[in-house]
Image (cartoon, rainbow, N blue to C red; front, side, top):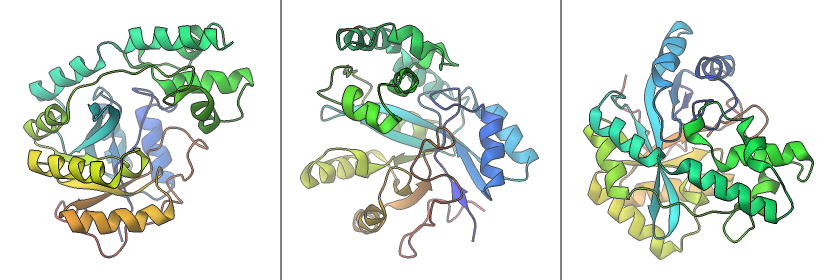
Length: 277
């Protein structure tokens, strides 16, 4: 059975390892097919491809695009993309604009909550200045000793309604799926169990996504619990979606599961990679 991981991050967005280092980490854990899916960025894809192929892994070019849907941030993964396609390149550039202003406002809000100089602190963890994210702030807050780990930071400071949360309006679902499809890729809803939608709203999201040409949802991911593996396998079948799998890796030791521990897809779903090889 192939070991496939189609959701990973590097220093190009908010990971802590460079693209080639993520490839090596995945390879050591026995991954056979690997995708780099940095947030709103594809500049690491060429290096990742070279490193993966040198290690004997199959490589899948990918990206994770931030959108706003029903007032929440949702992530759409694109797989098997042409990372040079102008529509995708321009769309991602548009998506990245405004991140610095958001980061400075997060820092201002955190200062009011008693955490000064958070912008400068988070910047130490940023390899790509265009992509400062909440995760970079979370790493800095852990460094200060105010929280023990990143999930605690998000719970106390960086989630909706907390002192460091700053809403950012991204592009639309139609735009993200359109960019991915224009680049020859397959659109996937990332970690659907993470979003705080009612069952009805989630159904509307799935219906709209499918009508736009989306083809898959993540079923087994580091953001899902074991119960959610079964739940989203059922939903994938109910909606006629293919199933994807990926750790959502950002850094060794940060996630609930790493490459070696993520279980395979349930047997009752059709993998998104079923016809790739």
